[in-house]
Image 1 (cartoon, rainbow, N blue to C red):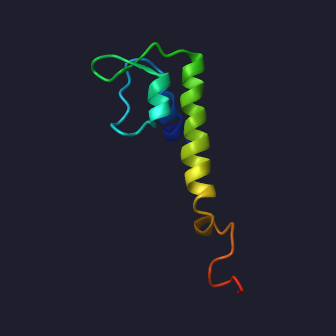
Image 2: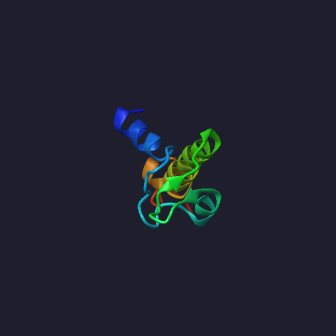
Length: 83
């Protein structure tokens, strides 16, 4: 992984960070604590791991691989499929 990517992930595992509006899913927001300025509070190791795991599983794996296999050449294109 590149350094900027690691810094990006590390940013969401510390207190007083503000995620972009509509970036987190509702189930993530329900499990995290925020102050009146929408800053992350009460972050600990487990919540940080949750944020990183959800990012990896949902945003990377699900959205980039499972929902778009044609863009990664993981499935035959519609031109290659015989009917």
